[in-house]
Length: 106
Image (cartoon, rainbow, N blue to C red; front, side, top):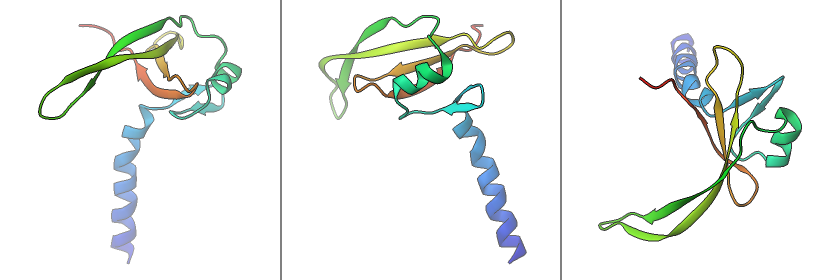
């Protein structure tokens, strides 16, 4: 029974770092995909930049088809010295679709 508990705890610990990449800390609050954009503005303040981008949307299968243009807002937050800037993708429905961290370019 103890071995099973340790194995489960180890599996949970091993999966944790993957989830960290999709959260942004603003003070004591964690922002995650699915959060409302107004909540993000309330907790994190105005982004440093937030241009609206139009990106091509594709459907994949045996063939790839161009099906239109997808609009997404990209909000960029500088998080301070030594921290990678965060980019929040805000979907048309006003919710955080994704969170990315800009890495230094080699």
